[in-house]
Image (cartoon, rainbow, N blue to C red; front, side, top):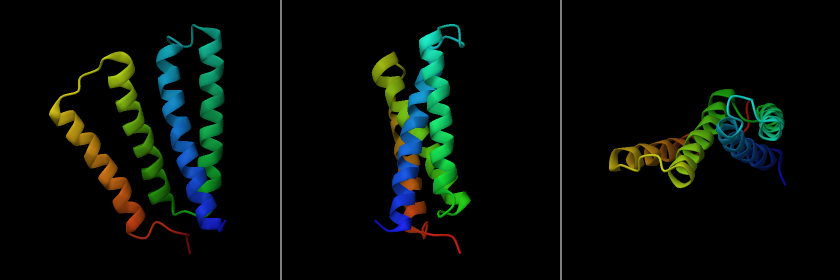
Length: 114
């Protein structure tokens, strides 16, 4: 696996962990429930650590945007599925636009930093 491929894998994992800790924030009920709170903080630490490692190779603007995009899209989808949040056409189109932006950043040269 090339260093750039490895960095992208780490970045995707970091984004997925961001989804986990964002959902964990809700489950922890303001950090009043011990088990969800500990899991949420562990997810945060792991997500930030993987992001930091990925940013050693991927440009910071691209990496951070992709990380937050994965987190935003994943959290919005899980909000719809798990918590019955609105699934209006405008909301679904907006989620699709975030995905398009993530793909665009990758295709526009989001490879290794100089």
